[in-house]
Length: 372
Picture 1 (cartoon, rainbow, N blue to C red):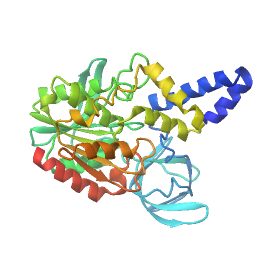
Picture 2 (cartoon, rainbow, N blue to C red; picture 1 turned 90 degrees about the vertical axis):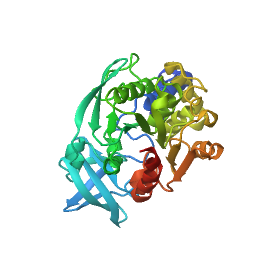
Picture 3 (tube, one colour; picture 1 turned 180 degrees about the vertical axis):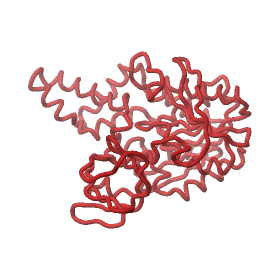
Picture 4 (cartoon, rainbow, N blue to C red; picture 1 turned 60 degrees about the vertical axis):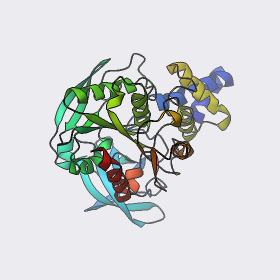
């Protein structure tokens, strides 16, 4: 349901003021209850599968279906990976079908594109052995995957808005080749993880404590240092852990992909994408603040470049419509001594690897090599 439709219906019943408040609450909920089956940036609009032939799939033509890169294609009962655009017509786009991971991709199915390429475990997706770990968080056990490696520095991978712990598997083959042990963590409100007391996300403001628990878990089982690797709100959590954790001296570096450095801008972007009029956007941030206790300085305090003491690889691009690229640009500009900015033109939110994997992985390799 689009916000304008909801507001119009509500206005006809209870008046424009109440409708605006309801729309603000609805818009804030999109950011505070992100779901893997709902797009957060408009790039994952619902598409129809028109034809599946061998290694090709034909979809409804739109800006979404013509997005560049290796992407996930997900529906109610299937998940696949699709690659390059091979052909276009006035009504359709044909892409290379790389692999159907589960279910059946059939004509007529409703699907959407997502940066989450994989939707199964590391063994099934990549042939890598792993163990199912349980990280003891403050709300209860948090499911995690551990992929072993020979190094004493672990990578803790923290997914972000609208994805799950499967999303970081895109970079797992590189981390495996570099011999890093990798812990793919879940946090509160994820599938299989404990629910937060209020049932909503806090854009990293409370969830970071679950990532801190993952650091304790890693140290307990042999990690001498950790690299925190976060996407979107996962990057916000990484910054909070590096700033506030009792074990912050164990954190040797940060990788921040599409980081949320301004939570208010993210809430406004999600509300705008769902059709909320410009004049009502402040209601969305006000509703988010009221429901979570966030205020303007929360989260952004740990994103203050002056407080940074660790090397950072920051991957972002001007095409991100959820988390503003300008914030990352300013972050890197203020700390050139510690921050390496890797820019990916044309990539949407959390799509830096998807659009340009070779350049992304080379930047990642160069950054991680001194931290081994």
